[in-house]
Amino acid sequence: TLGRDFENRTTLWRPHVGHGPSIESFKSAKEEMRAAILQCVHAWSAGRRRVALKLSGGLDSTLVLHCLSLVAPELDVVCANLFSPAAPEGDERFFAAAAADHVGKPLVAIETLPEHVDYARVMEAPLFPAPVRSCLDWSNQHLAGSIAALGADALLSGQAGDHVFHRNRSPLIAADAAREGLSLSRWGEVAID
Image (tube, rainbow, N blue to C red):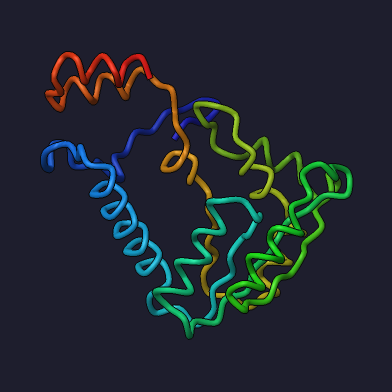
């Protein structure tokens, strides 16, 4: 945690590195990723009475919704789509509605406006290594109240899905490939890609 005048380091999670060989087969990788995602969504929803899902209508949150319908078909799920009339180009209510309708879950549209954000509270938030939008959600009491009114005992989203599904062009991918012991020619393909 970085504060304006302090730094506190605590390890909360350390991924297990070197658990096995690299997955070279696309089919195997796809099956393992699917199983891992279903397992995560099942763990998130297990024992819940009602789940609220922040459903943008994009790939990541729609995938979470689909997985919920597979692993917990009887679970009471209500979808919440956040929109701002000030940014009509970002209005994905149409896509969120299509996804929610596809699995038979209700969708609630929640309007978010700049005046809903408590900017003094934003300044109290822990500092992040890079700018993040989530601090705006954290400091939006209107949004918090709207989500609370849904009566859910868990709030899920597709947040951070880009790290799983997005082709990140980081040199760390090539470093991981080298560490895994890929042949020089295969490593070159990964590094160039």
